[in-house]
Image (cartoon, rainbow, N blue to C red; front, top):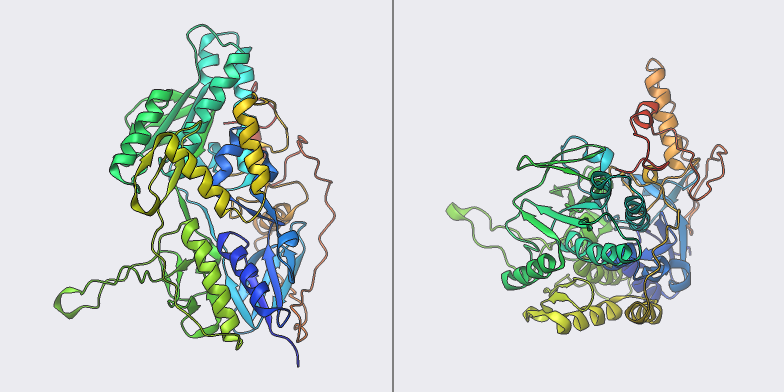
Length: 522
């Protein structure tokens, strides 16, 4: 008798926890395949510390193959799911395609950057959802300070040392807080023009920073940011972005070469492509995390609208059905949903009994840099060094690996100066804001190139019908099979190489003004 095939799409907080739980519960009684664009789990909450040079990049990544026993990793991005045929179609990082057959499917595709229809943002802003974006920002900020130190006039120096962060949620607040400390340390070694110092602006249309947190903690974070020198502009956002700066909604034009987009996230578009009932872009699921009408399909994390059983719906007026509440899109919920999803998938195979997802918030922590933080563990508001200790302790406990290395980096940062150098690994064009996969840096010859070539051919020859994709023969029972179509050979991707993929038009490249480096920073 063949073993059941389980395919998990995505290795974020939900997908990684699902795979780890299933690996323990099934004990080689099922074939588990994990489909993910990268070979690591990324601990997103510590990305601002990577961008600020506190943590080395590998500290926030956990090897999938090294920590998930009895789980087969397939590198690729899912681009289509056939629910009737029970197959997942994907593209690998080199442009090849493949198909995975399943008996149980767990959709944990996560989320992507949320864009707003603001002129110039997609072209000149960068998100903060993946390791490549954090590495790019660290290099970019370092380079701007170095160029500002050698600028021939105060105006250019001031422009390069101005950094705009849009979004005063957890990520944006931490990026601005850590960024101000990072640049202040850089300029101590590279003096700027007299009277010029790094300027960080934190913008949001909300009335206060960290609107999700207790109002007292929000004011505490606001005070820490302002004392540090961050300009907190609530009720203000970007009206237009250009190469030389941003126009704010209050009419002010800010000269800058840096726009960091931390407005928020939206569910991965893959969930919406299934044609199943949705809730604001998220796949509706039962409390047991399975999709109604599809008992073999489960969903969890940001891609799933999970009923919040800790908040029963209030009765509607006039006999209308009660209002439903869903769990928010947070790492805390995704991590715990992954455990329940793994348990219930195993239960669907006869290994235990299913259980509903029920989890109350444990509180939130925000690292404001240095010994400063804001936290409300179990509803208890904390600030200052105590909150800082709680915040770092929480992260160490939550990380599935690398705890000793992270703690060592924190200790070294406390006693040694940071190394303000550019690594040159990630270029501006390789981390576009409007990508469906912020965890990947685009490289020449990769899957992005193949898609760009396909789009160009369709534009040039609209009269030709697209040939159907060959997704291979049906998968053999007993193992998740994939059939690869060979990718066309492309140039070798050399980190930091000046080549650009064909997805960038000549007009876009020509519009880049000289004097900002080969990557066209904005």
